[in-house]
Length: 316
Image (cartoon, helix red, strand yellow):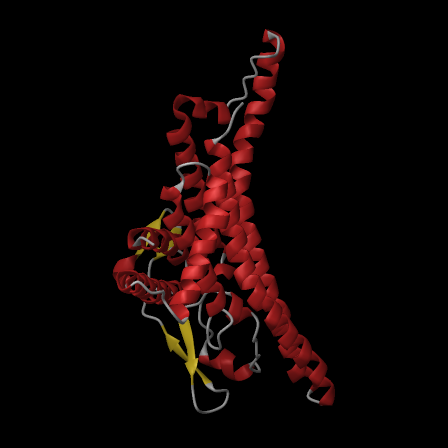
């Protein structure tokens, strides 16, 4: 997998996420003493913030570490304050990128060494190679069409990047960056431009047929009428694809975490033997979430490949 593709996906995904306003006023000392402390275990896990939660040896076994705020990274766009300082989800994306760089470059080197020695790779490298080969031969190439090898690095990067971020959200003290609509929307925008550029390269001037409906088999009057009616539908259809990609990934990852954390909250609410039922349900949902983490990465990659193949072979 090409490292440049991974870097492009990361850079584009980080930009809109980091460019968010963090103007919420901190509560005053008097207000903090007058109001009882409220424990919220759900919202901090599925929302972005300016701090990280790290393990700590004293109850509640976690400590908040504030992330730096860079004055030079703050500027105004009209009335909106844009802050490019790091946030929790940005850190999770950077961590996912580092993990992928280490694992995938290690797998590539192990494969080259094994090929030179006339053997095969073993262990985790063998498992990663099997996933890569399956995605390439069974998912990407059959859907993008002939001579689609150039799309393999990008789609594989998207798959592993989403999968790693999903799994990081299941790790204690972690956070699910794909539960942020800015992240999923940016990944969908990357897919959208890839799809449209692939269409332009494959069809040339005939790409306009995917924007403007012009049926030569109809009489002239009906042809013009259908052009006026169907052309906006064609254009809207192009926008619904990235919208569906972004919303599907965001909603699935957010909903699963809300259910898990809601069951965990019931354990503290009941504070009795009946809390065993919510605990069992939480464990069951966590197992399901592990499956969903793989499934959503697979679906995003599969649909991206399908959309690329459709526009490369489009005939209107």
